[in-house]
Image: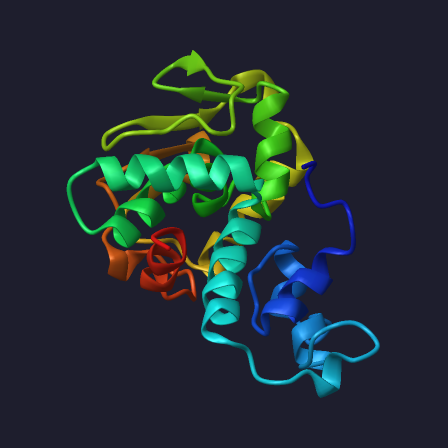
Length: 208
């Protein structure tokens, strides 16, 4: 299965809430969820009640679409979360938050995770002083993520850093905007992961 290549705003409308997939547009009145608060499609306004399975599926899809993963990738993260100590649903979200593309997005270097993946693929970032071009690279507490010196004049990066306060910076990372550098302070707790999802429903879905 390839990555979704359709209209991004349709994803948020399908899930019924903002997933902040388009960056700045999501914070304005132009946001499609604000303008049309019903699912896309001809029968979007007349869809019936979801079954228990449908509710669980929507929660899984919400998380998968938020982080930009295909089903095979997402299932692999779930099995890894099952293997580790802790509450499976919380560990799953922690693993997804620690992906390098998400960390770059959370630190404010990119407007959304999709842009973050592109920047990483083009080798614009260093982790602990070493170039990393794999968006799925898992960072650890104490890791330093920074923009390569030769890439700091990219207009989009500086523009996004200037909007960090508006978007909000999670408590598990810190940013040094002047030096295009950020640090992962600790593994995020569930309270610090601002993804509107009931992760236990995903565990129930995969446990069937």
